[in-house]
Length: 142
Image 1: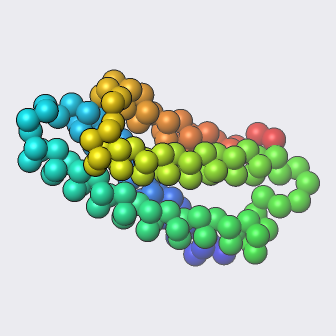
Image 2 (image 1 turned 180 degrees about the vertical axis):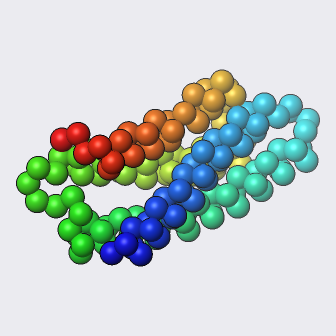
């Protein structure tokens, strides 16, 4: 079980690295001057590669988490409200990941109209979700 936990933490940390950095690339994409085609294409290439890689990292992170919950039994049984809250955060993270893919497609199609300031705020969501998840797992407040 400790090996599964360790791998889960490694894949979660790696997935979060992508969730932290991809919106930062979006900030830069939103700031690209209209005539800077090479800069835009370079940032799009970076974003595509990062999105693909973080999707690959998310799969074992989620699978190992499910294994810990369903097979090992962590968070199952009465008095495990923290796990329900954590699972809600996981669902929100999956939604955030998907939203990043939608945003990337809109940038690639030239249809993204949001400002770099909006993306700076968007970039804060995974930080808050990680903070909440870690507190729930470590402190188990309910």
